Length: 222
Image (tube, rainbow, N blue to C red):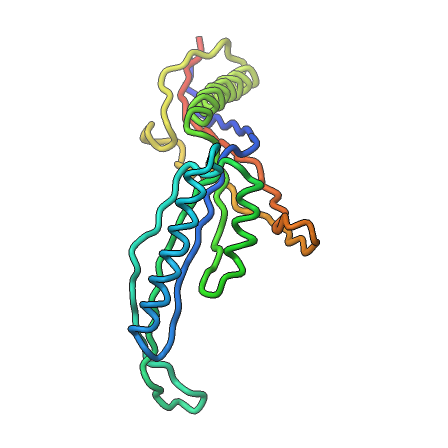
């Protein structure tokens, strides 16, 4: 009788069902009040636009948030090292989740060209219900992989059928394997700007959402 400790891993890819666009809104200049006023006005304009989207039937968005405006100041230096007058910046971040990717493309095309707006990233995800369902299937597959790997080792070593003793998330068995961090739930945006006259703006090409499951398992042989 011997013990075998292995890792089982499974990956599955799915078309995204939701997309969250991350924006940064802000201005800078020599006047703190002016920068704050411009950032506030821009945030209010975005908020009004998001409210209109939310009231559409059906709405292309499922959730949105505009975070509070923050300010900062610094003293820049010239090329010869001289200290220049203070500069001020006022900015905030916003997040909008879309279920309609065509509307998302139009939104990015419209707001990405507005002065003071930066589109930082698009996070592609599944719905929570779909994610839970698919994660269960991927996890079950990871367990199957662990068992098959242990059986291969046992057979090669001249032993019989394996029987599970312990199974856990990576790192929880205490010894024998090192935990590995998984980043499987979100993919970044790949996009191509289409400057044609159709008005569709950004031609989004979302990556699949990858779900990764890893387990550590310890088996014994008969």
